[in-house]
Length: 130
Image (cartoon, rainbow, N blue to C red; front, side):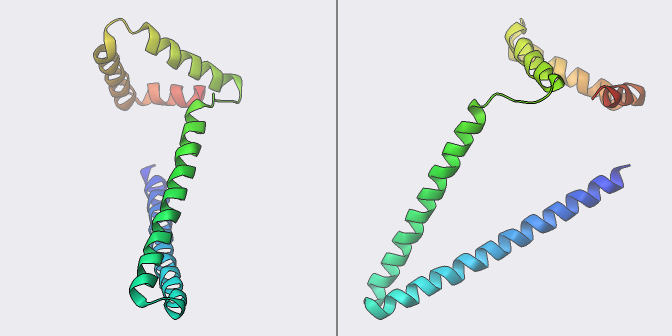
């Protein structure tokens, strides 16, 4: 049962690492190309400084875009079927009605997780409901 899950996890990790390596190589060659292009027009030290400045500017633009996308995702209410809305509302109500505070809520969630992990019948029932 866990074998397909581990296989998928390994494949996703291999794809992510390959993508990260390829992105790094692309950025190194791109930066080198910008430096070599600027070194014909500017002294080498100024070309290196300009290349570093352009890289930092690109990084800041990417961070601003990601920050805006993250804020938009946090503010967006889940859309979808009635089950998703029911789960969203149940989570909101559970958070607002927890009388014992976060500690009691955490203990309750650990108990539910332990019960689901220990009981195959309860797990199959939950999977049928979902």
